[in-house]
Length: 57
Image (cartoon, rainbow, N blue to C red; front, side, top):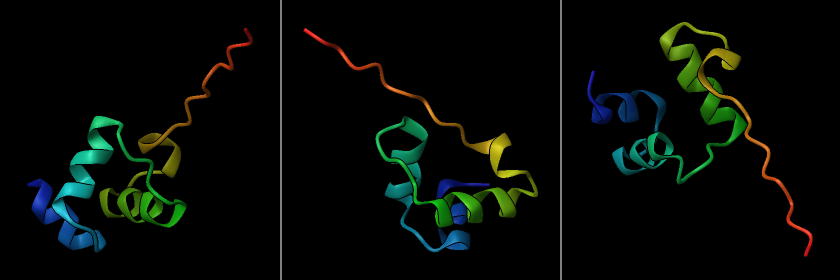
């Protein structure tokens, strides 16, 4: 499957898929769910949240 094919299936641009893969864009909950459903996986198996540490200083 290409990025273009995935983008078409979930209703976004190829650039959006590229940005998600690079970690430059956080998809909406709806888009993340569409991607997970497309692959037949649980949401949690596809996406996870990385908490950023706050720097006090």
